[in-house]
Image (cartoon, rainbow, N blue to C red; front, side, top):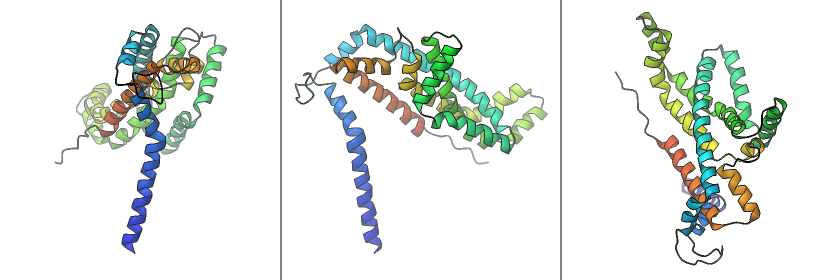
Length: 265
């Protein structure tokens, strides 16, 4: 009876994995294979080539969009990490009722639909007379990245030993010195995870960027969208493959990086 149940569970598990591979990863793998296809046909293999990658790197529009994307992702990730870390520290020092309230408010942007966030930010910029462009995309990305940083830092703050911080103060350290010498090293893994998560979220965002970018500026996601509307070029397969691999590597690094275990005394 037990063996029969285990067999059924294994079959269901294998079937579930097969569905994931077919509907999620098979299209991505197909796109990556087509990025090396010498023929422009999506149904016929014409031989291995790197010409679409060369064509992609020779394109001014793609390189411009890549530069803009990396600048926005890095700047928004860095600023969101600073603000999110400070917010997490402030929230962690609150009373339980206030902490629950603020964490609930923090989680709303993550649960909210991207299209609602994008339209509301666009309307806010227009209402305040801010011209849509690079600065509005940067502000929008910082806005939706902050909750992810808070979510990454909060668990590390819960694990910190407050008595060590208070002991540092008793020994004559200032609040800033005690924070950087005692607290910050403990929460650093969470801060780095928050930055990488924010960078990744900014790198592949489309909807919010689409509503807040204005004319004359493109990120990789908006460029791919505009190019696909005019017809799919093989260089877009190459660009999409590079974006996917970049995001995949960052996520693997965040989730599977080695974690230092505390030394047992």
